[in-house]
Image (tube, rainbow, N blue to C red; front, side):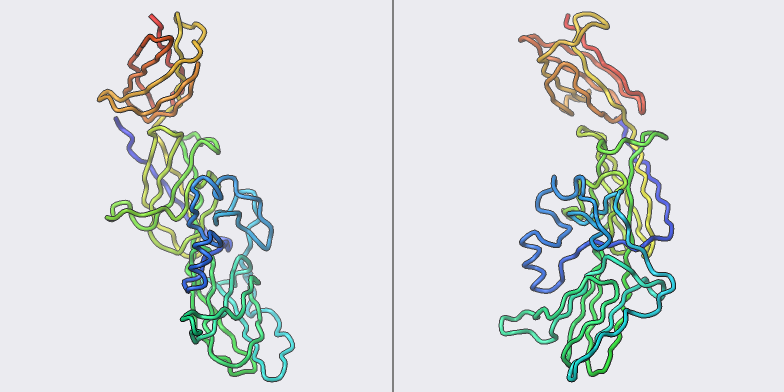
Length: 341
């Protein structure tokens, strides 16, 4: 049976996007364990399915994937400095923060800033001093040494700063990119809700058992990741139409990914005569020529999406068993009738 993958990607300049990322410090580890601010959802079927519409301040829905209908935060092409410095009391220092793609435009949304004391406390952890989600905040802090962490999707940057006044500027380079996914059969786009994608770090050919960094991503959603290599597992339906593709995400770009499936949607019917009414309460099994079970279901006319190839349909009704061999051709949806004779 053939299900050779077909894959296309096209990059273009990318408006700034963001998702929440747990900090790579002890405080963040506890938040991740509690299921907060993490792309790594403990429940695969929640969070990434129908993400909640987002607002300007919170562009991403639950689970870190941007829903198609959400407003995307934009970069600020002509911005050259952070926001105005607030009044700084005596004995304090202003820390002006900003982030951009290299020497490009400032990122104007979706950032999470956290400032930690540079010294561990008595428990061995870094104490969180300030947190802010403004694009370019100016924070007022006592003089001293700090560690500043900024998260933008799964891309992060960390920088030590020493505040010795009156104002200290810290600019961060975030090598983030994004992918937007869709599936097709031939030239026909697979409708939303019928295909989903799991995203993994690295190449599919690298050894090791890995967990996906994003699960059940739907058509049109955007996943923000650090630049690098990833592989996509595309599932069309819930049977055997599965395609794996390696991709490369570049910093500062949104890469549109099109995964092409060689498959078709088949409706099974058990009938007393050709073109007759489907018999209810029929148990179905779809097998490969070698006898491997691909799909089992119960109903008068179940619909199953199958990869291109040859199959055998077995129908069980009122203690009797009927079967038929059939072939699936890419893009040719149709009915397969099994005669109850």
